[in-house]
Image (cartoon, rainbow, N blue to C red; front, side, top):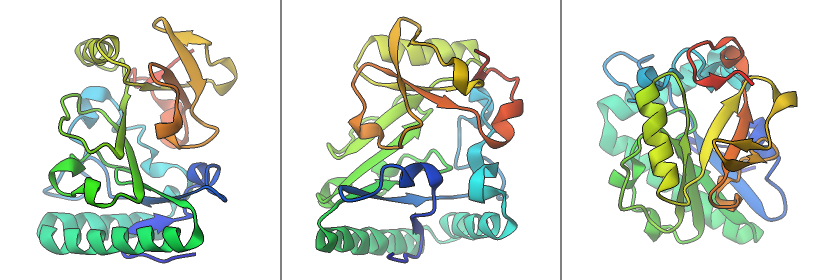
Length: 232
């Protein structure tokens, strides 16, 4: 498996479900919210209530060496952004070429544990062989490349935020991701929209438009009472 400087390949249990003969996923993991002093890569974390229940602590993220690696990347983003972007662009170029040689589709999620407006930093359209995708809580993102798919993350930690998410939903075919507490009781519909299983893989760009993507609480999110996790 290819080893890259910033992107991880084959390191996420959920994305592995979608990897195989057709797709291969690379993810960028940073230290979320304000874990690294002087930088917050998740500007909506407090409003949306997802800070305490962040997936940063789930899976391999529970290991200290993994957390330290994510912190080092975040410090590089904070202190030497140009070098960070140079390394990221090198990773994207190498990953795209690697997948081309293997005859599979390159998939990249840049916000594994962050919520950065990557469209302001990376010319995604120039990587025509890569399908980019992310989850986001920033509702006014514009000017996205056609190969960049966004799913909006829902939360009831703030009624104002929840209402704004639904306004975005009602006005477009944009999908929203909802984290439910009980995997065994995920509803067939939510807020009037069809619910689809978002845990079978992480290939969000393949989801049926105008849907609610059901996820379930993992790690510290299982204890969430803020409203970020929906108690179904």
